[in-house]
Length: 271
Image 1 (cartoon, helix red, strand yellow):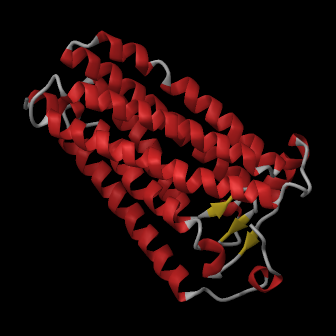
Image 2: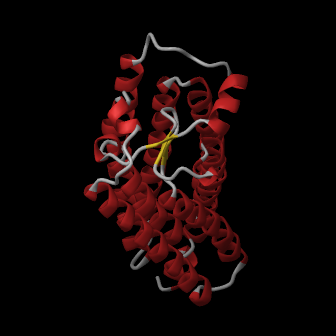
Image 3: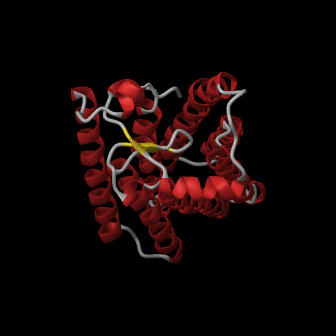
């Protein structure tokens, strides 16, 4: 992403950016309220307790990232505060995304027990290794300023979503409502998510990688120091317009799927 000097030095917030930030803030509050409601009303089985903890981390970090959005490689943020530090945000995101991958693995493993399909439990073992590899590629991109790592990272997340989608479609054939409804919705959400990730996110990062192919790269040690201290607060919508679609979907539908995983046993008990 090219950062013209007029954007870097801008001290005003574009109206469109303000509306988007307000929406993200409201979304963070709404998601937190939904988590609290689920925590009070869900069955408190071992599965639910673990999922609530993992989902709580994911919901909380997504709320934090909604209030302090950043573009990691470009070192762009909205608010000039240490809470917008790239290193802090990326660390929190890594923890949250690994929690989400664990949620997926636990969900599929528990689903395999409920419907009597042990092969699904084998597939569940793939989620955490895929997520760990994706996070390593992401960190390499952020520290080295190389967008190709982001393209590979998003490709792995798309693969994980495709695996989830296929799992849900397979399991939906073996159950009845309302669990079937939940699985069909999950199938559609993750199939669409995988397609959008490849069509939008991966394409965006490949384009940025090609655009800056001859640009400077940092060593990992230098990149670590740089990500801790350097940030550019920018309030122009032109800079955030390309980030807004994926962030909005990530902090809404992505969070809602995390919350829905807590409800697996409730849906199964009504089958």
